[in-house]
Amino acid sequence: MIKAVSLFLIGMLVLAMFGRLRIPGADKLANRKCPKCGRFRLGRGPCECGHE
Image (tube, rainbow, N blue to C red; front, side, top):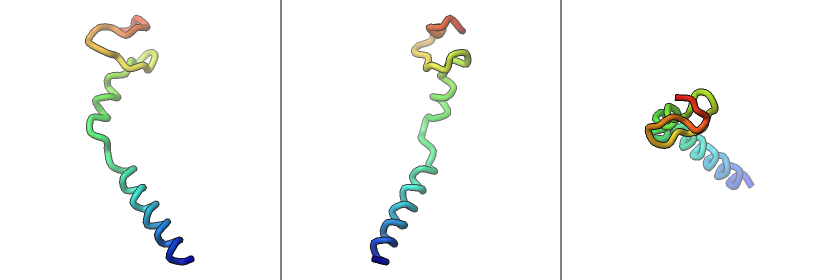
């Protein structure tokens, strides 16, 4: 029983370490959102909501 609990806790620690890793390009994706409506902008043109 103790072995199962310890393996579960070790697994949770490993998942927590992976969760803290930063995703490459995440800041770039955050900058690609429209500040007005929050949707992702595709291409170089204005957003579909009309905001530049």
